[in-house]
Image 1 (cartoon, rainbow, N blue to C red):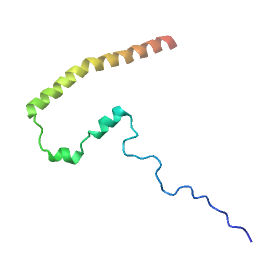
Image 2 (cartoon, rainbow, N blue to C red; image 1 turned 180 degrees about the vertical axis):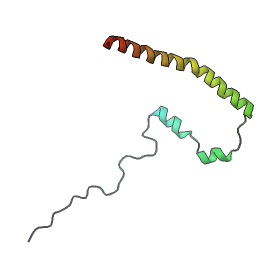
Image 3 (cartoon, helix red, strand yellow; image 1 turned 60 degrees about the horizontal axis):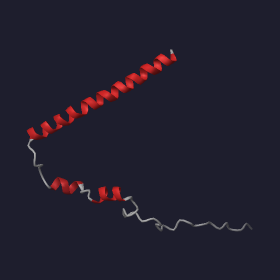
Image 4 (tube, rainbow, N blue to C red; image 1 turned 60 degrees about the vertical axis):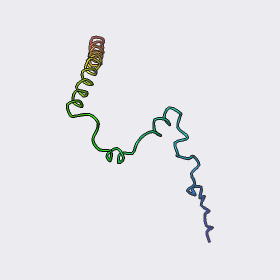
Length: 88
């Protein structure tokens, strides 16, 4: 008769590292501990800004982001041009 192989049962379901947020670095812990639940945010109701103010804020955000985005696109174009000239 053949002997029964003994299985190693090393996974017994215990958690060695707690996942409570204490293992995070200080700057990340501060960010995640103050986060509100999405349900709680919905229950609060409308924001303090009117539709006109909200649209003005979004427009201002895009006005600030546009020059930065153009610089990034120009940098990619310049890089592509230099690579094209180098490999030609």
